[in-house]
Image (tube, rainbow, N blue to C red; front, side, top):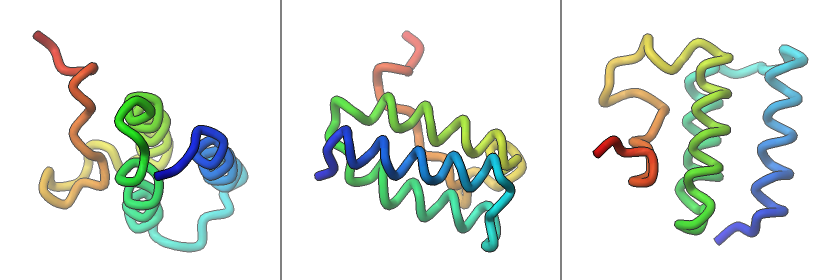
Length: 84
């Protein structure tokens, strides 16, 4: 499990790479690795925060909607985001 400080550090570093245009790998591969590294390990109470940040990064990189759903690097949102 990651702590909030760990998660913020990883997301800050990723955000800087995205904003500087310093990605060397495919954006889809980069985001998939981030989802696995951060979201999949995050405690349940931090997942909404992580999901929101990673979804924003995916949108910035243009990989949020142009991928087939089963290959999408974006995970299903946590239940707190589900519409009722």
